[in-house]
Length: 505
Image (cartoon, rainbow, N blue to C red; front, top):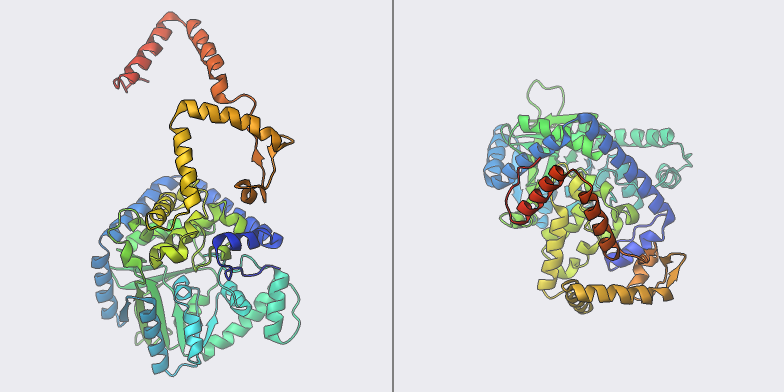
């Protein structure tokens, strides 16, 4: 059985729990590989994927660089469409605004479509604290709500659950035993939620993109529940991170190409809804009253920061999670916050600006750069993780033993003689711990690594040891070349060493 492990005090402790949960590891690995494979196939079929990634990056860079202008433009146009626009500086402000609207409507329940911002604000708990039932209508979100857990993935929140666990949860809700048949389970949830859609006073959504030029908001989804949330209840509340804005509908074409392919490998999501204000006089459906709460909650702290401003470019596709070797082993709950994976490892401490509380989360990365390669808008998350680690040390939260180790590493790597000497000593010393060609001991710094994998031993002959022989072979090969070709190659080498001649074919 998979369990939520966010109650452990550190990333390492939560990761240890996850690594010992075989079902969790298998479920996360299976789903992320499927999503990653779908994304890679969709990108390949698209043909000029990197060009579109660059287009997406430029749109996001431009928008964030002029965020105040586009936010004001959006707010003016949305208000002209009849939308009540609210700006919330903090999470407490956003919650206060949402609760005030719900209380004014004497709401007994709120039906929600999937929204990471409401998770970030812990809005469900706030609603329940004043006696208002909050019902998640996305199937995955509904499942983890019944389980009393938080999302473990940005796109697929119940990635860590199987159909037997889900059947147990839904059986308790149904008051009868439901079989672990996905069609029967989905049918029960569909019937249950239809009743909630018809009864509720307020529908609540997130926002994938807000269109500044028309004051519209756009939702991407695959289940159709967001359309129910935005058409049946009399009042709609949309919560949007302040960075989720783009200038025009033309820009949406780029995002509608990048987001579904990066998230799930789809060419298009099943439903893409554009909403421009509440119901008009002759409209058949839609809310009578619409509110847009634009949330800061630490986002503006990234503006003007050369290392972290690009963090606001994120379009919440989850591609970095699926590509990350760390996430694929430990899942989302090990990160301890609302957002997981590489984006969570950067976003959580950046928004919180609390190094003491989140000083270990940036270490949950191999710095391999897979997140950057997967990101549809080219956010350099691996560079940001390095910056967070540096800031951690500069703020006085670094590990003293680690600092001593890095000084020793620098001393060895900065001197070729010391480096060769250490290699010779290491080859001798490793004989005590090598088993079947690998180092499997779980002592000292190797304990954490070798608990779940093995360390390869140093080869008998290194590349450096063999370089002299290889160089001699190369020189002999040059001697055997045609004299004109050899002379041409030697000229190229000389020019490059002197800093000239870069036009050679």
